[in-house]
Length: 61
Image (cartoon, rainbow, N blue to C red; front, side, top):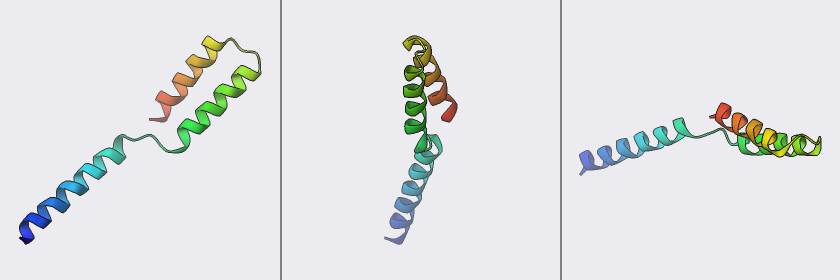
């Protein structure tokens, strides 16, 4: 019984650490969206702002 529990805990810890390692930091979405809104408010073309937003998101990961 203890071996099954230990195996389950090991598998859960492995899955959790893998998901944390691939996740973006929590501030990335809000930071990049605020940058996007500022870009639009400055009158920059939307496609250029979208490209900057995409670069921001991919750089955050």
